[in-house]
Length: 302
Image: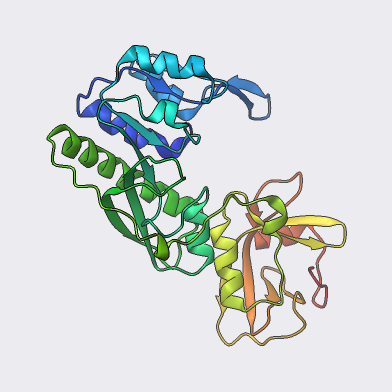
């Protein structure tokens, strides 16, 4: 059970290992791209390549969906980046249902663990598989794998590495359960930290923060949903920054502009803007942006 790109490596790993997958459960086709063509989810596309039947339930709480799963008589259910399942579904498989989560649980429970780990300046994260329980992300853990967060990582690059590491953890977990060697470990709920879903209004940059914090904020939200700031009436998305060594602090948000570079004052220094995007335009480097958008030293972002 899964929907986005993050879940595809896990499905592929199980297929390559020869496990008989009864069905794939995923989200419905959605309009995507400029032409708004109805497009299958990444997981559905992978399932169809392997000729695996696909279910697209409008609601996982619908008793009809639970009945569909019950009729399949599955040994095990694997969940990667899917919806919150009710007990009426996750208790059906004979050997249980486990989930892959993109953090070292109990840290960063919630919908956006990759983003929050980078935004908070962490230097390490990882993946965890765990048996589902009714409370989200609280079940006994099975396999954990640590992954360093590199200084140049953003949420996109870290996402891709964690998806691959996660696929190996999923395969290891299935093999442990198959052999009867799984030893679930209860989580220490006192060590839990949240990673809730991120909404657009939370992505606004407040330039009166420390420069290092702003840098982590931008890379933790890049490429999606993307940090943003305002220049007058124009919303600008910021995708990539660099800390300016020895940069002098000034009025937060104040710009220093040259022909090919753009720096912004923070609470205790400056950050250089490397990649950004004006609404309705493509993402571009600061040098490209400055050739087509009027900015001057002394302007201010807010």
